[in-house]
Image (tube, rainbow over all chains, first blue to last red):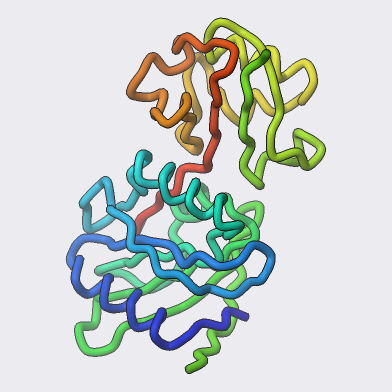
Length: 135
Length: 92
């Protein structure tokens, strides 16, 4: 299960809405081993594309080093799908390489109701998990 | 002195859990070949044919080696090489 503060959930949805129709992406960092997302980090989508995203490699290097120095890890890695459902695509699965992370997908295809779902992706196997919002 | 190589979580199965390993070589490609002798299997996760795999980002100090010379990038004692998983995906 992903337990996420409502404020962080809302920031992810707002980022996805703001970048629509391009895909938005980012990270929630938290203390290593805690499984607790605490810090919202919107990342640039280096592809600036409605169907693809990629973290800018230089920005990723800086953010990963900051997390390392703060003894944090990426607890959540999120991105949006802007015309399809919030479910990992084949490309998402082939790139998923943080087995401890929750992969959050947001779909902005419906402008009134954002779909927000969370998955574990380990060795190519996708498992959806419940999302519990806390205040 | 040697070259320090930082390994991401996903590849630490090849380094007995170590976050950092050391190696030698005059280019990045040679360094990976050297690492392979002590950490069998690691090179295959980094290199595909003659180039870097698209699933990883490799940095020399703080520069993405794709913007340098890839596997031909010169390396020297005291450098730090960082490997990160590329984070990417999409709707298809």
